[in-house]
Length: 407
Image (cartoon, rainbow, N blue to C red; front, side):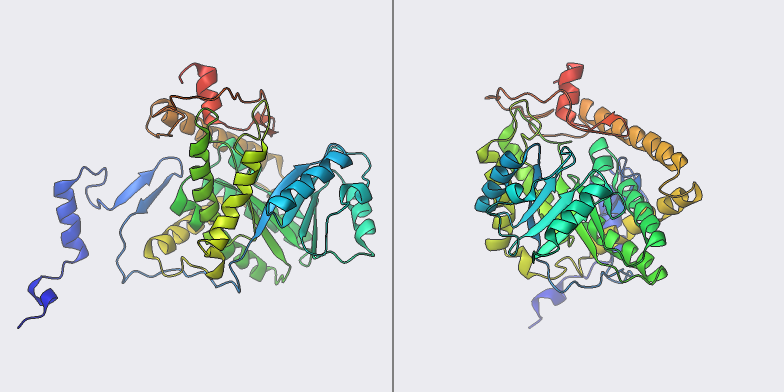
């Protein structure tokens, strides 16, 4: 008696492609398994041969991450109340933005906050403010303290929020990071990335950054500590269809932690509504990480995407593309050169306009934004300004459609 699978001919990739050409419409007849992503300006394959060479990411010791909450401090009393509220909701990492304060009363801001058991970050406006914070902490024993200054942190969330594609975001991070390594190879660097809505590509983005950043650190023989924060944005969020945002935030957060970030910040989807975030949206934002840890146990896996053919090849493709753009930025003078800022600004604007056009033309469908509208729309409206960088406003596609009268 023959074994079951002996009765079937083993197909090869070439035969499978030929059959695909007959059965589906493809914009690439020579290889129907490949598709072009206009936003990312890359051609990706959807099927891979196991014989193809792969680029593997060195495994981390743990895949756990910090559950972050952002607190913009306008006065110490309300900042303290927000901090305690976030901790009670389940956050274990507080990110204080104190750039709006001229002087800081840390006794009041951190009253009741057990700094020995949480991760603490500060974003400051100048080195004097940073020195003041370090002095206050000098006789204390926090679990973790990081002060984000212009000399020790790289924020690519801003260009992500403008509409940049992945290669632009990674190249910008590498250029800024290289500039810091040239000045001091021992100082720790904190990178903050945005998270896009393409699940597989976002996983590959963080994995590609690990590979490329290790390459730069090896070049400079640096053993400095590197911290990576990932933060959700608002490009694809909807105030008219609020609960769809929770699904988007979950997949975005999952892609970041599968990519191996150190801290995940889920921003409440109504942060930039006229009325601001509510207790419910704040709780849901933090709960996403708690569910991924306590129910899905994603934190128990080390580099869970290692060995996935598609993810490995996407990682390699993004690494190659980002490295080429990084080299181009270096030729223009590096991260501090005005030519680099102008070049990136123009390139990001081009991608930003393409994103808007695809949503306007419904080439990209976003539930609640340009398709399948919520019949019970909320009364929430976007703030007039949701943030700027390089004198350009952050991109919010729903807001763009409303402004253009296309929604």
